[in-house]
Image (cartoon, rainbow, N blue to C red; front, side, top):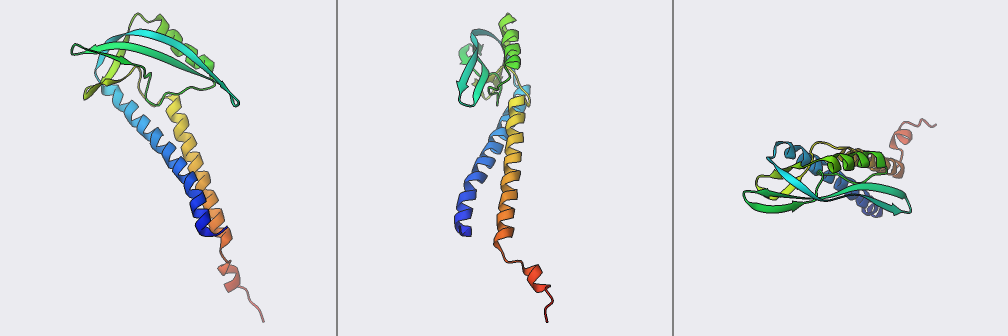
Amino acid sequence: MGMGCFALFISVFYLVGFGLLGYGAWSAWRSTQAANWPTVSANIAQLSVHENSDSEGVTYEVKVLYQYAVDGVNYEGSRLAFGYAGSGSRKSHDEIHQKLKEAKAVRVRYDPANPSESCLSFGINRSIQTILTFAIFWLVFVIGFTLLVCIGSGRDRVLIDNLSVQ
């Protein structure tokens, strides 16, 4: 395979890595911003732990729908936290579900510039940590693989230049 074909091939892996890194960084940034957003009281309209099974196993995710009002305008939201995603650890999702189920009301954080943008929690949660860690390891692997291919495809000038022959 020529270097041009390799560059095209490996670029897909770089795009995936940088895409994941960008999504993780954006989620971390938004979730950190939400810490300073104003809050209002909200009612939970729907709450469940969703179980998703596929060939790779089972994941769990808390699904929530809440209703709140800002300046007399009613809104609905479903974001638990920026970057939050399901995982195989049912216990942690059950804990979130239980805390929300026992609550009489919840505090919703909303973006003052766009009150329809909201969340129930904030901070660099485990889902964000996982995506950022995966993206970094993915990119380190792809960079290492790229270096190996580049080093392996060239001539060994040092060996040839320093080879003493008579």
